Amino acid sequence: MRNLIMWNLVTLDGFFEGPKKWDLGFHEYVWGDELERYAIEQVKSADLLLFGRVTYEGMAAYWPSATGEVAEIMNSIPKLVFSNTLGRAEWNNTRLVRGRAEEEVARLKQQPGKDILVFGSADLSASLMRHGLFDEYRLCMVPVVLGGGTPLFRPGPKRLEMELLDARPLTSGGVILRYRPDGKRD
Image (cartoon, rainbow, N blue to C red):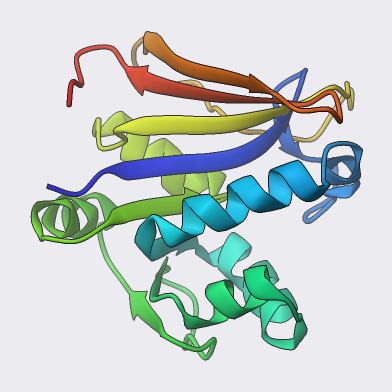
């Protein structure tokens, strides 16, 4: 069974983007060689990326013209975008999925393969969380308080308790945190 893993950079006050869509300037506080190596290692452990429409459109606008090892990986790895409004998905190796994401993701988790990663995609993540599909949450805590923006975690029907798997401080001041939802065991 494959693991579904959330990966996001999040501010101390819980935002994964600022007040405007794609307001990600706070990433610069922690981005560097350490976080780049971690990102490469993480994406290499996966064989599928999942996105909601908004995150997909931002990623698809950026990565095809980017260069470097991360760009090569991002452009070549298979991707799914979940949307009922997107006309088509043109970024290399992307398939558009309409309908209920939780059903498709539950099916994908049963297939053989490597990890499945979700980047950004707060709406998609909220839906997958409600259905208990995430096996791990990986967050890079950025030492910034934005005071406003898009929260990573949305109010849900119940509390979700987590077990800390790892905490890795970065020389930039950020901390990579890995959590497993209580009740999910290897």
